[in-house]
Length: 241
Image (cartoon, rainbow, N blue to C red; front, top):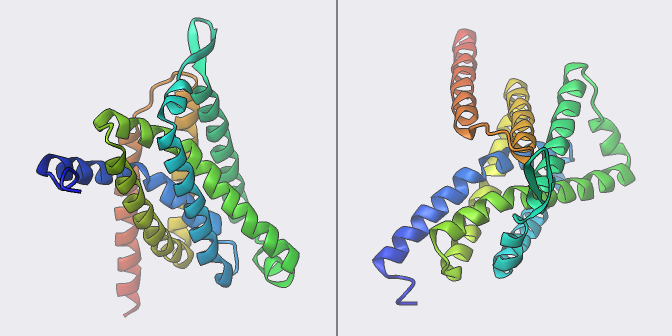
């Protein structure tokens, strides 16, 4: 415990926790969208179970560091480009996010909604509930590789990494509920969030085939567009008063 509370280790813990939260922004937005179509009574449980499973997976992956690092080893090459299990997972995850967010954008643009059907059909509600949990866990599994490899690069002291991951997951759970409520209240922000998830899918797919696209540009554009939209929302509210 004294070793953990040493100044240098506390600094590493704070730094790593901050990085884990930053790397989890795209995951937080996806969770908020994934549970939005569920009835109110099911949303919180879906978030808790989904993030809980994701936390268990991350800890298991940390305990199997050699296995995680082995996923980056080359399996085959195409046109001189090496492909590993990690590349394949990035490609599959990217395609999933593109299809998922694209379908949501399409249905929202045409005004197609299955909310009422889910409320009246208990079987559909259960399918949507378990589907949301599986989606949250799988997407977090894809996103986990970046955060875990980053954590390993900063420190090999496992307790610090586990504590940082647990704190980031708690922040993710709290933030996803708050963001989910905002997205539900302001549909224009939901469309922006879906576009963000779509672009994350494109970046994952590009990373999988060795095309470098900086996430920094994406995060900047998201924050800038969100700030502009928030100003528009405030201006509309003030114009009504």
